[in-house]
Image (cartoon, rainbow, N blue to C red; front, side):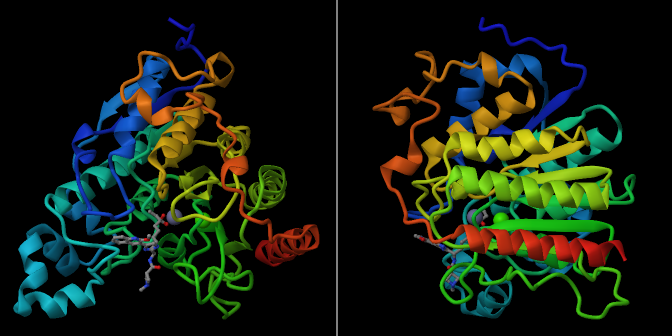
Amino acid sequence: HNGITRPKGYRVSWHANPAVEPHHFGQSHPMKPWRLTLTKQLVMAYGMHYAMDLYLTRAATFEEMAEFHKEDYLEFLRQVVPADMEAPEQSDRIASYNIGDDCPIFDGLYNYCSLYAGGTIDAARKLVNNQSEIAINWSGGLHHAKKAEASGFCYVNDIVLGILQLLRHHPRVMYIDIDVHHGDGVEQAFWSTDRVLTVSFHKYDKDNFFPGTGALDSTGPAHPLNPGAHHAINVPLNDGIEDADYLQLFKEVVGSCVETYRPGAIVLQCGADSLGCDRLGCFNLNVTGHGSCVEYVKTFGIPLLVVGGGGYTPRNVSRAWAHETSILIDAADKIDPNIPETVAFRNHFGPDYSLFPPLSEMRRIENKNSKAYLASVVAAVKEQLRYMKG
Ligand code: TV1
Ligand code: CA
Ligand code: ZN
């Protein structure tokens, strides 16, 4: 085949279960678990699976998910069926758990949640047991879910569950989130601790972009004696940011954070809705620009848990996550940008059939991030890190 082989001096593990892929959120809902099928087809057509340890994810148990979530909420997710959406006696609970258009009840919902959560928990455990240096679960990354509430297409917060596993062994864990939306659920879960540093890059518009949180001055609890003070980092962005500016910003922010915080493990949420041409996003990143962030995080050589997240133009989500898999196994230079003839569903990648179509040229959104604005964000983060050090 194309020369992708195993010995790299570090192990990469791939955590997946094909039973996640056929779940349907419903007609016209933007979240399509099928994008995971497309990703896997690309990864396999390129032979990347030869360079990883492949694990079939088991479903997380109720007890494992209850390490973060309230039991009555999990009980609800376990027993609810689509017909309950019409049942008047269920309407109070459906409302209180924020079930609705964004987070509908669909067939197999509990199975779906427990499988993607099991993947992230397994991946974290491989890292702490020293059986993997980089663990990947593209079905995870569902960063909006709260303790007892669904939010923004997320029901169970697999990232929080994975970080809780890492915290059993590592005094400090850093969380990085490049989804176009604010990683509010993860931030909130670790708001009052200094053992997790959360860093989210996102489009921010308090009134017009979901979830409306993640302002630059939202840095943790206000009380200086609360250990969580200064341990939330938010990088609010405007429409249309491009590769070069994003990467420079990412390196300055993430580089300073790693240097100051010295995490024992890093969790990287790779939401692909920050790509250009995304159905819900508003940035202009290319597959290469998005991937450069992953490459940069890898250079620290710190145990790394990589999860998916958003991404609503499936052909581009799969391009990005396949490219990022190649980066993580150190084989990006062995990948032919022409998508192999053998890949299933190859028609989805036309007319260019390239892994790197120029997304930012296709539906370019005006860049509303001035150099001065970006410099002021970097300055604010560096100032915050001075406080964090104490
Ligand atoms: C059903 C059918 C649901 C079509 C939802 C876009 C739909 C959206 C739909 C949609 C849509 C959102 C809000 C408004 C909250 C609502 C996985 C009451 C064409 C991690 C979640 C975005 C992003 C939620 C998740 C957002 C993630 N945008 N069509 N819904 N208010 N919800 O704005 O971060 O990527 O859009
Ligand atoms: Ca984000
Ligand atoms: Zn998103």
